[in-house]
Length: 164
Image (tube, rainbow, N blue to C red; front, side, top):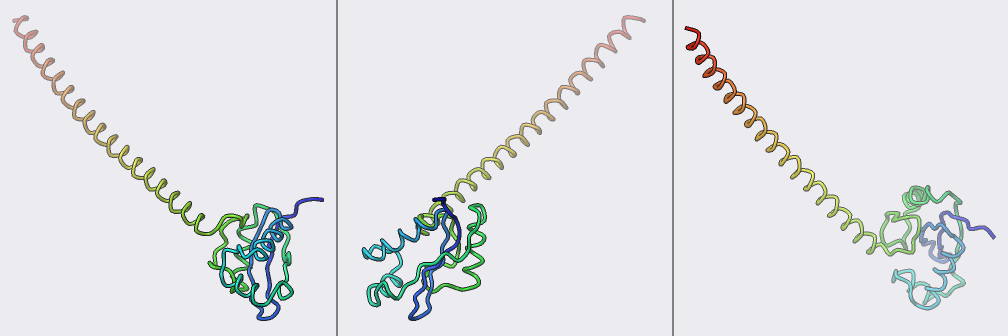
């Protein structure tokens, strides 16, 4: 049996509410959702409450689009934008594998932002240091040129005195 990636939804046939997700392994992910709901371990209280009150018979687990792994996030976001799923806590496709809770992804994105900001700050610091070094080098070169000019001037005047 081959592993199929794509977009799925969990649909409540009583109220029409849906949860939309994506996975690199649709069959496994849908089984995981069902297991968590059956064991009252689901992360979203709204869908868990409806499951507990209505029961499994009111929910349909369906693959709605087969796609390549690299297309999961974009395709999931397209479906989220189109259907505005009531059970999705956030209306943002997090990644191709919904095994990571959104809070973890947000923390990762924040950490990634901090790292990128630190890299940016370090690059700006390096640019400032290089600018100062360039200024120092230019000043040094100017001083060196001035010193050489003075030496040449002195030695030229000495040469001129010696010829007379």
